[in-house]
Length: 532
Image (cartoon, rainbow, N blue to C red; front, side):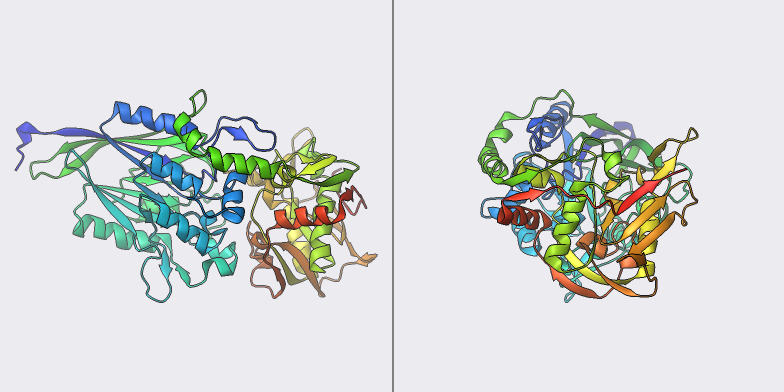
């Protein structure tokens, strides 16, 4: 028994990475220029925290093994060595990792291999083996007995919205349950059975409501339930979040300290807890704070750089492979202009999708604002710099009304300022940029007038020279994320799949160009955005 007069105190530092997306080295793969990102820089921040504090816990919150050419090359072309991101976490002595939705992008075999190679447990209470009903990875939580004597429980949760995006073959035999339901079950176990002093929930999901007012900031689909977790699940001390790629720190919701460290390793999330020991020997949390530690100006950990050098050399060699030549211009100099009227890059991607699938209508997006487009000599680097996701293609059968509804949703991407200038609407900027949710179409002719009210911006919609029949059916090719309704395109959900093309679109584009040797930039001016 410890008496109140001889009360002990301790400080615990909990560090979080989330949404690293294969970001290991501080470079931009489109041009190999220096970039203030990556696990090799995060490593220096972790080392510094360990030099300052005795009790340090390090957790990765998901979306680890997908997202860069390094990760892609390893998963798709040379999967025999240890996963390079797992190698990095092993080297840095991570205590645990949580499954993200992108962990499933390369299939269960690649994921399970990465999990086996890890010197740390992967936690997830929301994904179950459908047959046994047990947690998919066997471990919903861990308990860390710290040197001070504090018992710290870490529960892993993953957004259960994954079936709305993922290739069904990649999640076969799995069942996804609500994060609130799972948390209520397992937090109780941690408090009552495991008798932990501190409950840390590491949740690969974000916030569905404004952190201050509680007002909904998105459709309440269950994709992001961070606010609900804080309000409805008793006993959580710390909520580590991710998935939305937001930078959040210094905030408490219903007494729960929260943090979210952006994406690609731009910052390290840090939660600091001050505890004191009670007369019965248990510990109480006296104060909690969260902050984001930036990698800007940090030196990359040279030993880790060396450990992944063989992976990087193979990746760079692959990226520099010539694919073919381009006649004409497919450069991206102004992303907004690309999204305002028909352009050669988007037309090319749509035409490849139509050609390979046999569909007469296609849609695609310019995924972000750093896509460079294609130069005259095209390499694999150019392909993966523009098509950054491991999407596959699906042809789904939808109605003319579905097409019109999807165009109206895309038209919400734009808004006009008070001076009549066009800009990206807050809906597509907050809480994270969603440029990938604005689609551009081929095979139809359309015009969007964004000076008109939302929901009535499609002012022209034709197919084969006449007004599109809203009651007719059309076979449309799009990526698997969109075909499943990803990006809240509910009009595409549960539609008949006419054709499934399970090869990555990046590979399809590369093969298409290689086959032809030279491709041509073409423009048929089938669509435009106007405003009065």
